[in-house]
Length: 623
Image (cartoon, rainbow, N blue to C red; front, side):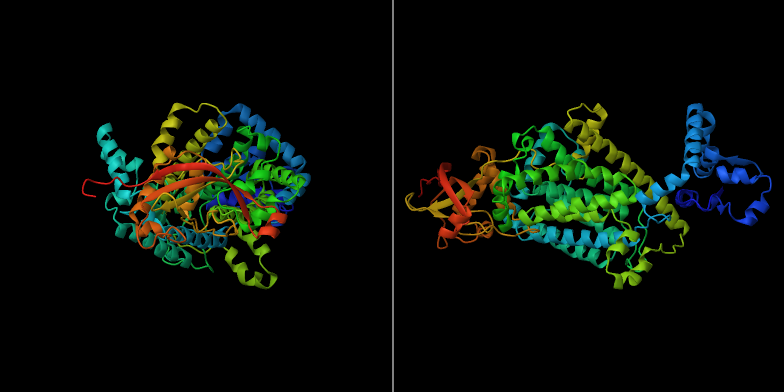
């Protein structure tokens, strides 16, 4: 293949064709005098007007035909399409002539959008850092869950995992489901054992294996095990791990399986180059996460989003605000409306830059990452912001990463942008071919399920087969639909649980992080997620009948269950459990600066009534 070596646009695409064709095609610049001497049958005008492809038998192709023939050297379908589809052939030649005529302008445009680099972007060191970040997020997630899993789903917890699995078994028996279907619908290792010891062992294994990923040891097998472990726990902690960040972690974790290097130790000085298709799937995930977050707000037709007043309520009514949320709540209304406008721009417009040339893709990172940092500072959304920031980081390549590190470190890191020399043995080649087939299948499945989700979001009816595929894969929780705060909550009801021995004097159970005591400032707690505190926010928005776990919680308090009491800041009935439990419902508000200065309180509240009437254990005939 002979091309114009002085044209940046030509050299840019030649580099990509080299990657695609490998050693099947040799490439040379037409400015090389040896090349012109070697092929005297090609005139200077032909060299100057189009690329020339010289075949082994001496036949010469030019223009679009040459391009399709080069690509056909790898996959013959390209050459057959050009030869057999007349409209494609005509359109391709016209397009090629247009590009050749205006290649100087297109070269400048390409340089502007894609950057000065003509070589293929490399991602080895970028994804070396990505996996260290993913390992840290898994470590935080397992550590956070380990500190509360026994009170939540242990044998004497609020919703015991064993009871949940027994209920699933009863439904399976009643519905005549097969054992395979049971495991697909409820995929968890806890089918083997759901004891407290086993739950602790799963969390401990998650912590240890996360450290392996952070250290770069056995990254491939480790990310597979982490996905299995977190899925197993998410299934039996159904009420407590049903949040979008849990689903997002599982989805990123599954994609990471196809990206991970399968070495004993991943050396940052010679990192494995990750395959391209899973990188594209990660970009598609970031697009869906950001774009759908904006789309659901528009599609909900919620007045607070329609008139751009949503942030007048958001900082107060979000589940666990931070101290900065109190200050943000009192910003002027014009600033709140401007912030909503900026958010819509970032969520609805900026994500499309992800699929555009390199420079625009890199530019898109900064507003999305900035939005995540602002959310992180004003609200406790556990590791959600950190995963999203990690996805933004994955949009970089090694060349861009080197540009953002300090100048004094650049020479040290420049070596990381090179692809490592990899002598592929026959066994490894067969493994890679199998990996490629699995990746293609995964891409098709992700594309089908996410298309079905998008069609439903935009109120269109997807094909029936897409719906069935989504239903089959729903149990894996790893291809998900996203979109937070479609309808803005405008009130902040809070449940205060109280105990008593005489139904006259009631003492409150204080939570660690949820609003209760009016004088306590909102906490920073992320990336830890106090799961009970979060669920109390959702429970307050509904009725007690909609939250059977809340009754279970009150029963555990009447029993004085020590493991469950660890979820509370203190136990007002340390000597013996109370005879009665009730729950009062209050409307909470932030104090204004004047009230804060006068009283020292961050909150004020009004009593709305009882959320749960006083309950107690029945007295048996024996007392």
